[in-house]
Image (spheres, rainbow, N blue to C red):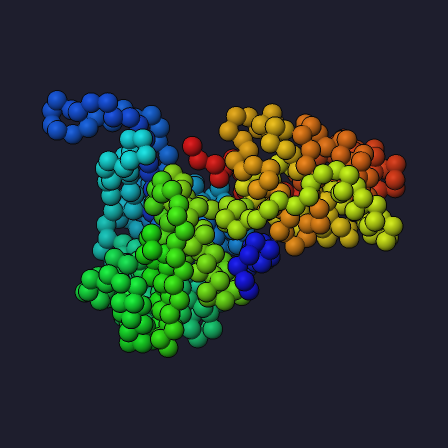
Length: 479
């Protein structure tokens, strides 16, 4: 697969039937934002005037959230304390119904909580509340009892090891051995310096600092990084090691000596929190959809570029990845689309019509459009123009301009045409195109849908598609 927008879109549209298992250190990331206008008279430290507090899943839980936002079904297993942070983390995860969370609860051990204090866009302090020692034998046994059946059901296994104790070496060994006997691909994101505990995994994903810590070397050149990683892969029976190198991109080193370097493109960096989790999630998404490893790396690099441009521990939607690959927008004028519809009707083909803003394309959008396409021979999308979106959604919307949104939609394998309208409703557009079916998502009443009378007059119908819960553009937008 060449990584162009059409192939990437086809891959991202194939994920909703896939299952990924994530095992590891879950945590809660808390962000305290404010402004600093003076220094404390008590000590030479800044005084932060707090304006808001946000929290979101971190660590292995952030990997799970990124996978879910790509449309996958995710089984997450982690360890929390019986405390408020653990309850908050659980509540955050319930917002994504495609994540099934098996929780090992430990008494006397706090849920890992990282609190970052920020003034403007700058982090001025981080406070970690956690115990990083390995969980005890009873907790490890409970963890493995959850993992065994989950491995059987998974298409791919991710080990997100932040070295916070959820994956002791003996438990890692048992999980890896069991997954291999079941023929499952294993991706491990390591924080331990001793990578022998990951022996036998298919893909190891250290960052450069972690690789240097493992090798006890200063690795300054791309060649030295590749050579060191290949040596480790051979020594520990790891198929490939993928080293993330920040501004220098990503380096793949296989045990057979093959090297592949995908440079990073120039991007504005706002916050690197959780960017590595996004890379792992995009890799897993692409590989579970049968992309080859080099193409998966290219997509992961694009996803990382989105994540570092966001505030906080970010999740990335399909439409944000596709935006990095988008080319020229397709024709969206009504006369040319109407002519296409006439030609399709003359050929005896049924035409479905769905409309919306489709700002930051997410799995809910993909679900609606795929179901719409299944009910007709051709699918035309009515896309709200920028002025229409602003009237409907308010200031700051759309997040993506209409040219970009139309290019992303045109890349979807089941979309045949896009027509842009700037009115509040698509009534005039429907009257011009004369579709056979109007498709809406949610709890609409068919005869109250805009344009229902037009399709009814032609012997057509309105089709209501159930909404895919847990997905909304508003959840993806961060200030």
